[in-house]
Image (cartoon, rainbow, N blue to C red; front, top):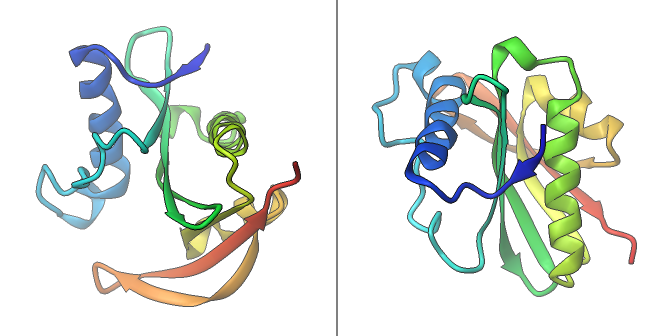
Length: 147
């Protein structure tokens, strides 16, 4: 399986479907809440890993958020693929894209349950952040990229 940016309508549909099913639907959020205004900006990088059956196994996105800084958002792995390295592959793809863009630091808002995943991959908690949907604590995390 190869990670690419979504290009076709079917790939975009699979990409957004996973973002919705993993990141919004379990908290009764409306369809459409998985989309962001800057998703189609030229500076936004998307990562899509399709399962052999054609659905999204993993997704994530990167956008610039400051001088030489990028932010990761909407990281999601299909439940059938969790624990199999898909999240790591998506993250490494986005980190490589950030480095290619000259970014030197990445930040993200991790759900409490995902903090250990990001820590294993070199991210450090900076501070507690917001609570999403009134029940999901988030933590600001950062990682310095090596040139």
